[in-house]
Image (cartoon, rainbow, N blue to C red):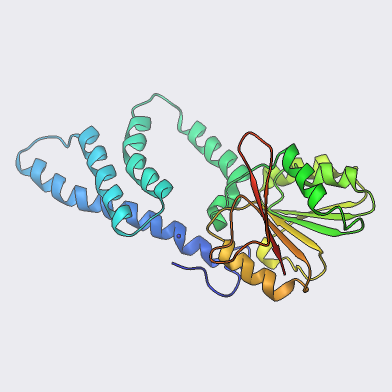
Length: 266
């Protein structure tokens, strides 16, 4: 979820991304359902038999997987397409009040809003990563550091406590994680916690830009970095390299998930 545009993909909070990758995936799932039902309903109707929903759901999942493979979707989208219809049918057989599904949807939106709007799920940076970032930026005691998609402040909190002379900014737009991060950083005078869209955030005033997003927005984010960050400043991406661009330095973090920090000098 086609190559990213040269302009930031989310110019407003109701970004075009809401109407591109996500709706394309929904259209693919609907196409699979229509393809299966357009054959199954007439077949079983002529035979005067009830539609076998378990087999139909499995068939929809299989066709959706085929469509996702033919259109070159990422592996996780293929998995989602294959499981969506069978799991939806299985859930419909459970004696669960519909209100619980609504509550679950609300909770997911509060926590994973970034995944819906920009293909950016919630990834939490850990303590060893914050320590590595402190080492990387040790020569910038009064740096201005911004975390794009700051989650619950797991990077900004430790860094702001360790570097009182520096200034830290976190940008987050998932309501639940923003609220947690705001509470965790509220006592830190050198930490600014913002509700905002990363594509609407100006990067001109920062010495270091840090992001832990996903592979999907990296090319567009790099273009934004090139357009806005001054020469000599530093862009650091956790785990996801910029496609086609060699990092100046790759830091191997000593943690359980073998985190890599990709450092790019503007």
